[in-house]
Image 1: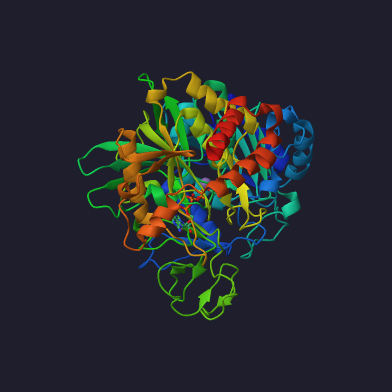
Image 2 (image 1 turned 120 degrees about the vertical axis):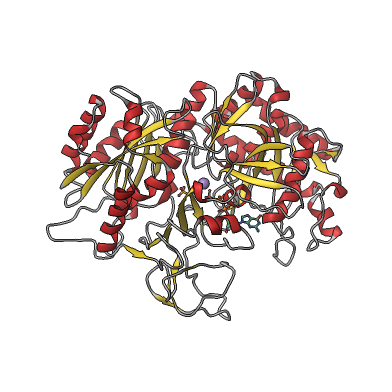
Length: 606
Ligand code: GTP
Ligand code: SPV
Ligand code: MN
């Protein structure tokens, strides 16, 4: 399709302006067809950017290697550019919108020379459903086009819903690497240097401007930029929730169904929990979503969640047939792999894939790599944030209702992170406000999902939304409290804090995690039905030890340890929140949360 075929005058004008500014060689409007996807792949194979994988092992799969400066989200180049700095809050980077647009217009000028501009109309959520939101992304990256085909619903049907005057979120994207005459990419992932990358959001005008990166959440603008940063602002204004949460369906041995969502920071186990194969006999888990949940109130006063995405952009390392067989099966065809290692048979390999490297590999940087298990210092063959992009419908346990525009009614919210000490395996909030308090203090050991935060240290990541909230986090806490105030609390989801990542003194995980997490889900399921399976403690409701079915690999003593209240550890936790975490939000920190902090401290000291 061509620009002249666009029937929406405002969209057409916006595209024409972008063409004038960015000066591409040609412009194409994406139709979302299989032919278009195949064409993108062909272009990238020809440019040396993509390697077709072995069709006998991985039909329809390709591998990309990105630039070392472009392997993850860049949080210190990500901006919430609201009119007032105080609306972005202390945890977001801010530049005055006029100034930022001026800078970025400078970068965008002629930035698509030598390239094709693709105009991608996309829907977050099932096309045409009331809850869906439409965006249009302009990009010069065929990689982005192909990934958007998988992660969102793209094409003509979206333009159909937009009609002549429908609302869309305009999203500019350029990799920031124009080509000179006769220049081509020749196998080098095109992007701009780090200091020229900008991932910008203009919440008042609902605009997204991204420049310089082609990777993941920086470039697939429907995901973190629209479905979280812009959507969180819409959700605040309209009284709903846009969250960094997985959505799962769980069925107990009696056939009773519940839906649970969970917010864990990046690389802390959402995809794995969403696709879990229960170790507990008779239980079943199915997937509705693995990264983002939009939740609105139904007429019955309950919260209903939809997954706005259509695919998974999941972490490769650690994924194997034991830890997550459903992910392994989902990515066995029609999958885009980025920054994993390549075998001689043109198969993929990564750390903890479940078997040793089958001979010499090409690592994610394109170098030869021979596994040396005696060398603890050996650099990984796959980048720690290497990922797969695959259609959600390929998941063997995708729930039949995953695209239901009504959404699914949520019974429980989980919060969690990687906490080697103190935080117990599972802990139920005593009330909605206590649950909001728990969400507000989520902390985790930092992972490789962002380029510029030091992996290994613990940072607070409230509600797993620190990098994804499009406004002041203090106002965000208030929004959660307001949801509680205007609802019948008995109909709201029950709130739980979970931690699969406790370590012993030897630094080993105590809890086996993955499929064994079903033991905790079963306890939560029964708790939602009011089972007498808990003890009240100063920090919340913890399981009676015998109410969690113990895996063989965990001793009774170890289980008791991760279900106990570490009084001294919690006192330190509370002191850290009081001294370092809450004060940064100033007078925007709701008093109710300080009151919760005081109450817990008092109970710990009693
Ligand atoms: P994003 O896509 O970055 O938002 O991440 P995510 O929250 O979906 O994380 P994911 O499920 O991809 O897990 C990230 C890493 O944590 C992988 O390397 C997993 O193998 C590991 N992991 C997931 N669940 C568990 C668990 O229960 N225990 C342990 N020890 N590791 C886990
Ligand atoms: C995350 O970092 O939480 C992700 C990956 O889900 S990205 O889409 O790159 O943000
Ligand atoms: Mn995520």
